[in-house]
Length: 360
Ligand code: MRU
Image (cartoon, rainbow, N blue to C red; front, side):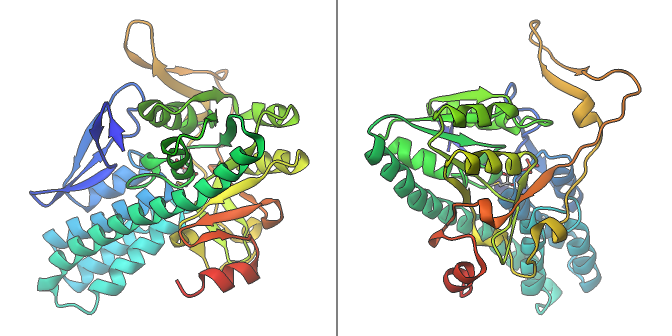
């Protein structure tokens, strides 16, 4: 996608066998790229959320393996690298999926062939991510177009967190249908949940929609239900970090509450899901999906641009008050209207998922 008119991806290899990323902790007020030179840089970029979003976390880990193989490609190094890069964040299944894909490819190879094979495979995962998101965009466009043909007015779509191109290599998942509909000339408007505590909606989704010229309005996380009650939301489209074989969906904290409000108001609730985010080993999301808990300071403090042009961090809670910071929640399959995958729309139940996605 474009930044000030210049095409960008979120991650790209450099000629000197390093990796460059957009540092998402500096957005929306500063556009900064970072050079990752070794596996530790990649691990830190994932843990500190310089890169975030399930698909991009996976791709960064794959490039992390490639960076490591350039330094040491022994069996012990491969094992240590994969074990380390599978750990920084527990919820997004794409992380483990990408690392295990690299491990399976590289393990049988002689050490001297691993570095080049790793770079090629990381690039393959990145290109597949882009193609998958474009396909999700096409299948989601059909839903938006149908709604537009039905009401012949601006289609209002609510989204939570950031599942745009910043959360992937390019195009995004939940935002891909929105970009496709916008490109197709369908009048639309996006309600952007700010998405406390890290504000991925207010700082990342709003930024990328603005870069692309897509009409949008940032709302507090608790406003969505009210807007649905007043008929101002035609559909909800969110991303996901892990989906069970039965269709339970894990996404950014607050998604479950949006799904409940959508159900209560008859608003379709769609989840954009690349199949790399499907965890075939799980059946009960609420019980089985590991939920990341991050530091209290993400809740007690906020950072932003001050009138003097400086970025500052402030404390919003009283000294001594404890805070809990759950990163994700699980929306049961019964609240999901459909999964928008690269293979098309799939019902959120075991039979449909098995029938339409098992062969992938
Ligand atoms: O904590 P984050 O910013 O990595 O959380 C991201 C989300 O919850 C996204 O909705 C999800 O990863 C899908 S990204 C295409």
